[in-house]
Every structure is written in C-alpha cells, then in structure tokens.
Image (cartoon, rainbow, N blue to C red):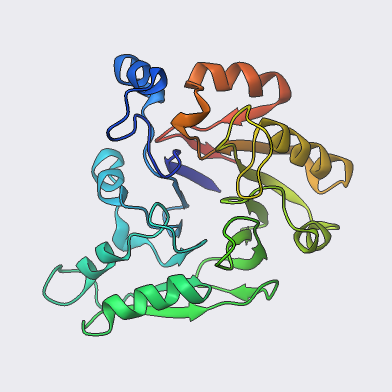
Length: 270
C-alpha cells in the first residue's frame, strides 16, 4: 500500500497568510520541507481523505490524476479539510472525464450536506453516503470504519480505520485525545500504520488537537494494547505555525521516539 501525504499543515498553512512570526519568516527563507499546505492523503491513488483548498496545487505539484480517485472520505466540514466548491469542477460543462466512473463521497451530516447543497443544481457523477459512527462499510476501494474524534463541539468529527489489501491504517485527525468509545473500539485491532496529528506542538493539552505528549501517549497505548503490529509505523502530520516548530525541530522531537515526521509530497510504502 502507498500513502501519499499531499499536505501536512493545519488551517493556516506554513507559512501562513498575513503572518510575520519567526516560524513563518524562517519557513519562507528555508523552503523545502518547511513549506506546508493543508492536510490530505491519497492512498494507492484511488482513495483520498479530505478535500482541502490546496487540492488544485497538490494536483499540479505532484502530478496526480484526480480522476483515478474512486472514494473520498471526509473527516469534518472545516474549510481546511473540505473546500466543496472545487468539487463542482467535476460537473457537466466544467470538465471532460470518464462519465462511467463515479466518485463516492463519505462523511457525516455536515460535510455531506455541504456537498449536496453545492452540487444539487449540477449534473455530476458523485455518489454521496452519510455514514454512522462505528458502522463498518465496504467502499469501492477499502473497508472503512468511521470512529469518533474529539475536535469540534458543534459537529460530529471523524477519524477512520481503513483496511485495504490486508493492511490497516488509523487516520487519526483532526482530533485531540480520542474519546473512550474510540479507544475501546480499537482494542483487539491490528495496525500497520497510524497517522496522527501534532497541531499544537509543545503547548499544553487541549480538547480539539493533539500535542507532542498526546502523540507519544497514543503511540504508547497502541503498543501496550498490542494494536500496533511489531513492524508498524507511526506518522505525525497536521502542523500549525503557531506551534513554532520547523521541520528539523519536529524531527529532533519525534525521530528518537520512532515517529516519522510527514512533509508535503512524502510517500511511504508498506
């Protein structure tokens, strides 16, 4: 299985628009892995998680063919994870594509409603599915279970357990420390890859995002509960400039703890 990290930043991106903090200044100067766009991953070119406003740039930068995507999983409706306006570009009159192929979109109430409202007047080739917590579904490309995140007080936000070709991924953000129901569901499962977030860096724990302590605590729990396979990998992503950690700073924190720091365009095979 191949996981392609298209973007690795939180809402603001790095460097952030309008910002003159030292982190943004240094990221502009250093470039490379310090430049981060809004978070999304592409799995085996056919399954995409989230549709941020930087999707068009990802398409250009990495030469991906979005018409190969068969399934789109949405974690929640925040604009850095769902810029639904660009989905209209795959409607009649805007693009030429293989009309025999539908993209299936999966999410909870708010993101699905946003997509339907924007696309209701268009001729398009999407199928939309409202999914329920902890109910496993078979998509076109994978077996997927939506789990409860701890993120936004006014919306049901999801993380995902994705099974494909005999491998299993936990896609674990946006979320702070997981709710008990999610920890309980994970017991007895086997993971090849856990993708976690570290939006807040070394700041104190908050309810909606993970910090360094939470990432390492989650890794420890997965290992202690024998959920993570012996050769499993942990990758951390979704970074904010407000954490004031450049790529090398993050590597110094996480690599000694066997956690891989994602960067834009990174691909891993497992």
